[in-house]
Image 1 (cartoon, rainbow, N blue to C red):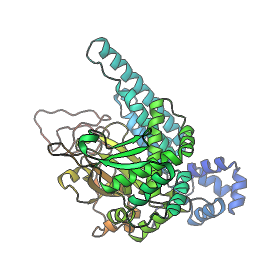
Image 2 (image 1 turned 30 degrees about the vertical axis):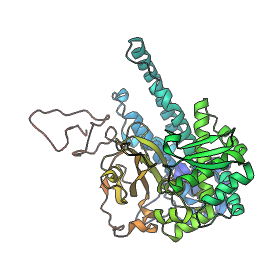
Image 3 (image 1 turned 120 degrees about the vertical axis):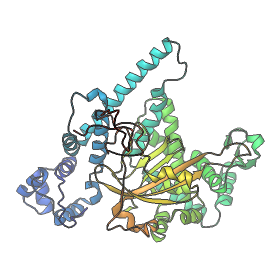
Image 4 (image 1 turned 90 degrees about the vertical axis):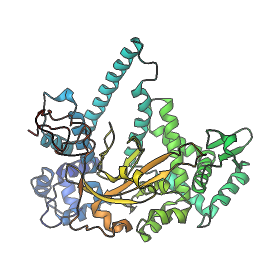
Length: 480
């Protein structure tokens, strides 16, 4: 984080929060940094921009990454607040975005608290609606919010840890070295580890035997069964997953317990996610994987060949490279189906996904279904003027017999445009004068006018209806 050109950086609330977290007075921090107390006071009140020298002293004295001052928490809090206050519930208040931005900047924790209260309100409202429908005899299924709660709880926990679990990374690196997993197909050594250490045999079974199941661990017969529909990278990953279950259960349980989840479904889902993390870390050990990623300029397909993993597995692993002193590019990651349903999302940087609803149809992640297997690259710009470089491609989760559709998803991976020059995929793009496509969180929250792809009017703006006029967008609305 440094000044570029005439740009001035104001980071007062973030520096004040850092000082308080360290338990320092203004005078003590100013003394340790070698600046005057009056200068630090002005910086904290955003009356003076921070200098490059000040930032470098912060990094040196407190052994911190300057990226922690980049405002990622504030950006997330601001996006959450905009989403919350776009609800018609608040239409009489009409808070200007400048005030929401100020709240997010000064105290993002308050923004998160407002978002938590809003989610609780939505849950209660949905519960009442579901109960009403049940009494009316219109519904007999599970409550939608109850079904979604475990997923949101686990997502929030993983996000709070920035999708980085150092104990698992360290354990996986040690085991990777002990097993001497190299560039050759790791399947043989992984299978032998299960057999020699745990007496577990690996068997590949025909589809008619496995039916709807792709992997099954038979504890009593000490047998791990795979469907023949699984490709080789998926088989490698599932064996690594089973090794994590058997050898690192205590470490995984400690991490799950630290999440303080509220119900058994959330705990089980979190346990699966953390064990998946270990499997990815075993196949793609942190230090080696980061070194190869930088060397290959993050070529996802070549990385997959080097480590015996699939496209989605590599993309997901790239979002976990957050080790202090050895960080990778802070990527964001999303997985959607061809109906636009989001089944996985994570952001290690400023990019923010909507908690409610899908994504912008102008984002190329949706166009991948018309170009299966082809990597699409795009530069996109959000309404707050932040600009990102995006990579997207379809993946198939498993093979399928004739006349049965295979699971197909689109994977989107991206980062702040400032990191794009480190990516092989940026070749051919003008990064100095980017032709960015303007996108939004989703139609309900986007206020961009005249969008031909708009599916809904924005919640935060009143509709303008005129039967005499038909514009580019089917929805016109007031920007006042």
